[in-house]
Image (tube, rainbow, N blue to C red):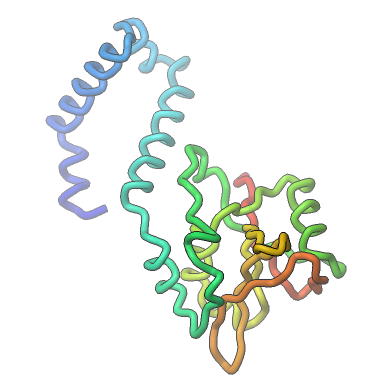
Length: 199
């Protein structure tokens, strides 16, 4: 946040105006003064927390980058043409997104792609389900795929009915994003990008 924005948000006028607008919207939605008062009591803390998550999710969605912008930020030397927004759309920003972090998991043994997806969910992880958070992770950890391949846990079915997942790897000294058939075996060197509950 810029210093200018911080100063505005901290000002008494901003706080008063924001609260006035909030009260008006609550009443417009059918709420009462009793509902508004409850927000200032211990019973209202959970409601305030949920409101904060929704606000952050809405703001993040409005400021989100496009598929092309995220892919460019990953600085890949080559990309499989089937890795595109139509096949791997950006997943929406979830209200509880901040409660889940992108985590890299490695299996101890060789697994097929389909087996890996099922076991990861059984262990309590969430699959990415889309390309957004996977691309954000690759952009922030650009050298990681030069050490070992990383699987984005989002699936795409081709015309033949086979399922594929994108993974970031290296070749010829360059980064690359390709697709791998989920019926193949994956060795423990592969890192699986999933969502892990913060805690």
